[in-house]
Image 1: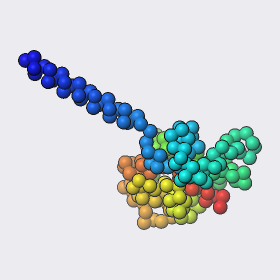
Image 2 (image 1 turned 180 degrees about the horizontal axis):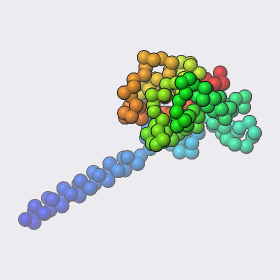
Image 3 (image 1 turned 90 degrees about the vertical axis):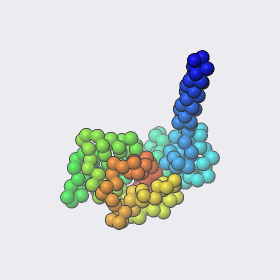
Image 4 (image 1 turned 90 degrees about the horizontal axis):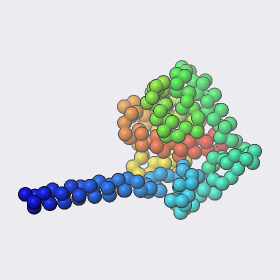
Length: 207
């Protein structure tokens, strides 16, 4: 009986140790390449991924400490003084508001380049929800009907088996759009790359 108790006790301790190790692994900072260039302006990325940002994202890294046109507020990573992100957001919203047939009012929250992945998921899945069947037309506004695949590739937005997210880069290509895509884990992985897609949308408006 005593030996059985010792075995059970040892097994329990081993299980607890494995669970603890798994928890520690989950707390580790993810691979820099899996995060991508879009977050290179953040303090945590500078601490953990400075080499990656300098090597893979020089067009973002070099300007992340710049100031805006008024000389006070930090600029977005690739924002220029010629066309601010606020101006692009205004034009993006105007395009969405002019769509015919119009998109629901709840969907207009999509029409800004300042949404975080969490905010975008709230728009898609929390009331008042925006039906994702309207997403293609709004992304056409964001991309100005352009094929931004080259920009997405440059910013590593499609790395790590995310080629299925191409519709965010080339919304005008109807063959990329699958109505069963939304709400699936594959769609959520694309949304996690939203900051990178937004960088490309911004470049579409200023180039």
